[in-house]
Amino acid sequence: ERGNALMQDVLREHPTRFLGYWVINPNHHDVIRRDLQNYDNLHGFVGLKFWADYHLVPITSDKYASALEFANERELLMKVHTFGGSPFNAPEMLGEIAEKYPRSKYLMAHCGYGDWETSVAVARDLPNVYLDLTSVVQALDFSLMPGGSFMPSAGCSSIMINGPLEYMVETAGSEKVVFGSDLPWYSQAYHAGAILFARISDEDRHNILHRNAERLLGS
Image (cartoon, rainbow, N blue to C red; front, side):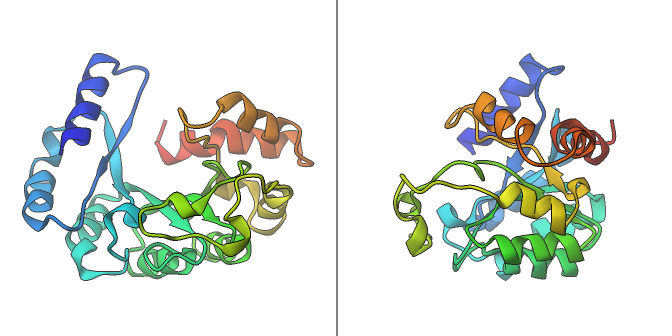
């Protein structure tokens, strides 16, 4: 509740610079019901956000049903953190809810980090799923996640990540890839550089850096 309120303050103060997602905590049903009833009175929010590895409830749980039904009815953007091998938000789990609620558009934050094959297949096969590059080119230590979700091969922060961007473009198409950096944790310049110097075309770069987001936001 505190974080959502802080985000609302930011959006009111800087309406031309920021858009936001309203975070849903599935452990508080009464709060979800109240927030969804008040959603039309919010300013600057474009959709809902799930962070299941912190809230420790699988995104396929019925505890998310009211939020998913609401977003599906409104055709909202859904920002869903995904991690390969997670019992809470693995990429195949996002595919399951995206098929069940097809009118929403899903940003697969972190692209199911580490399980690139499943993540890209889900985005390729489902028209309402997009790959969000948030920290994809960054080495992560998943042992720090409260839910304990991590791939054994990614348990060290010195792991180098090379090649997933080209694989995403070749397999799912650049129209299904959206720029993300995980600001302020990681450098936007570094992540932009990873796209600018990737082995993809300039058309692909334009799609990833701005066109896809413009289309998803209806701007």
